[in-house]
Length: 151
View 1: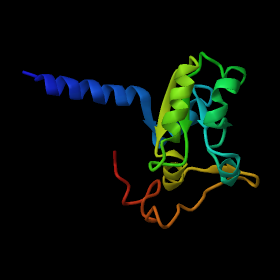
View 2 (view 1 turned 45 degrees about the horizontal axis):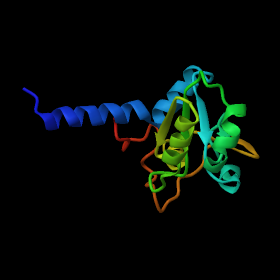
View 3 (view 1 turned 180 degrees about the vertical axis):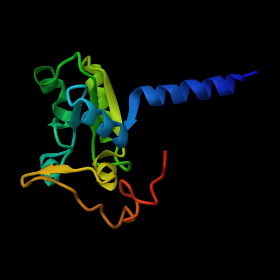
View 4 (view 1 turned 60 degrees about the horizontal axis):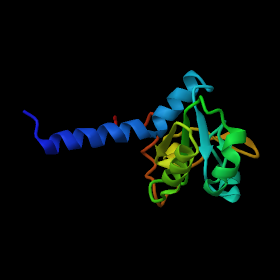
């Protein structure tokens, strides 16, 4: 028999999975069908220039209300990301996208975890594998590394 608390917990976790995704799932979805979702980088221009998810659209959160309608297809799900887990920029961007009528999700981990997983970023030089910030990521946490979390 389930208690009210267990039912509330199940509803909470279902909602998280409905409205959040992680970098591995985004990478897998893009590899299978790049047109299946739109990835939005909500960071500043300077951060975008340092490296972003290949194929992403640069759309800072403050610009979403004015520009999203002209840039995005309302029939395609949108995934927003920002810097990383210490930042709620992707949450704010996903909220703004939802309020603008888009099917939006937040990419947990942001560009920081994208890089930690060993996925390529696009820079002015093209696509490259960036090194994780050594202050935030041990070198063992990379795609294919022995210390991967296994989730």
